[in-house]
Image (cartoon, rainbow, N blue to C red):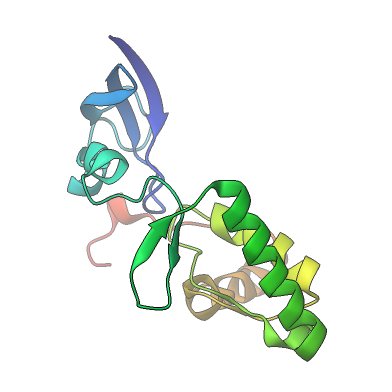
Amino acid sequence: MHTEKTACILCSRNCGLSVDIEGGKFIKIKGDDEHPTSKGYICQKAARLEHYQNHDDRLKHPLKRQADGSYVQVSWDQALTEIAAKLNDIKSAFGGDAFALCGGAGQGNHLGVLYGQQMLKAMGSRYVYTALAQEKNQDFWLNGRLFGDQTCHTTEDVEHADYV
């Protein structure tokens, strides 16, 4: 068993974690007392990362829906090849405006949007519908008005606030 220090990506706080790992599984997850902002605190989401990572219902391979509604396991190569062909057929028939990125952009983990941007570029689309687009655009506009730069991102001082 070994211990790794990391940070949670399930919200914008990115609390520090100390994770005991054995055989590729999280054995114990606790808050990192040395983390400068969370100082050892974690919520239930972070404490249950092992469940999200390895629960019994988690998909472990691609599944293809059959005509009767059932699913069969297929290889990654087959799944990606068939999906790419279908996407290219849609693009050829309807153009890039047929595509939009929906979802992603959680409070702290924006990797899905980064990958999604590559897909949108390949498909020739510019449409993005996410929580980030709905809730955070005004943050960047406000930062531009307050600080003269929309590319800076401030975070609320929740730890010292009376009300949030």
